Image (cartoon, rainbow over all chains, first blue to last red; front, side, top):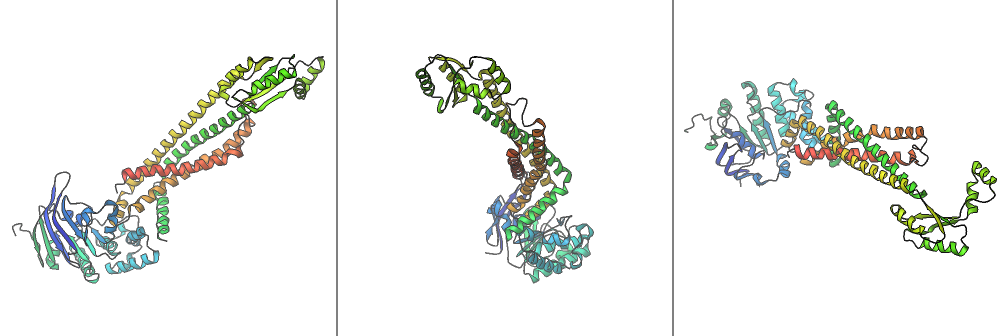
Length: 233
Length: 298
């Protein structure tokens, strides 16, 4: 079985909106995958299924051999400790410093403070924010805040990193920096990265696997693809 | 130890949250304080009512006066009949001759001078009888009236009955008030925690996303509720200790008449304070648990 496997997944929200229809796909360990499509195509829903923020109505979602669709609510945290999530809006805590934000997950797991320190410093080094540890999020640029978010996602060295439009709020230069950081993490940590985006430039430049969703249906899946705008392809 | 690190972090978080929402925390602390003051009053009243009831039970006796012409045999007969009543404890039937009664009454100087002017002892010999069940005292006293050579039967009649039923009402009212107030406090603290949860919803969402277990997410709120209840108990405890002592000294340990003796402060204030502290903490935690269950969708 592959690291991630979706089999005939359907997702309809309670308001009647159909987000995914009969999606099946598999992703191997260490892959870097773009999930593209217009707004409302089901990209975010697909990523949310992987970290069990949403449950499919039908079908199965396997992550690391576990069917997360059947995971009990009280056990979801165990899955999330193995997954790093990067958000478009960063989701940083404004009253905590960069160091505290990155250390936050580890503290809540009850890890020892010197172990936390080691891991935070390592993560900060990877994203290049060593001199900003004592800053608060509102003192940082958008790109820097996103790097803090990435550092928080990788601090526990997860095997899977899910990014939901991480460059959506950033200018092209900052986006490129963020993508370089993610690419390095993918290579160094051998983490699988799944990134939902509609940033055409990034997808075309990176030459990674591209999964294209349209109205909740998987339309194309190419190994070294480009951004697809023509829905007939 | 991992568990201690988590608890330490959560206690820190709880205190941070109390100070961050300071005005709200103070609002619920003052509500808790007011409630616990009332609980304290109810407890002190209940204690005193119980103690007064007990002391009345202790002093309340039926006096059975025996006819002057009764022989020793007749007196023994009266004793036998009194003792055979099921509401009478044999050990609590005491015969006092008129001389004994006169002697004890003569300890009072005024009465002694009255007795000295009289040629004959005007007092009758009597049995002093304690009953087991105070509520049946009227029936028991009436049954003694039919015994031969019994001249008169006396006891506190209507006063006793009225006092006892009044105490029953006071005690029950206090218990009901205590329970109602505790529920109100739990509700108030629950509301505060609800607002704390609301204020921290972003933080909670992030905690869930980064894989914090539900127990750890809930813990700071439970601790916060406990601490709020605990702080809320401080003022009521001080009032209990100093207020009750002051009141006791002010009225000289007796209320209205010498019959109603109040419980000494040292006997109840510390126990009451402990109860307030525990009730405050537990009620806070209970209120918080309710809010966490309802508003923390995890």
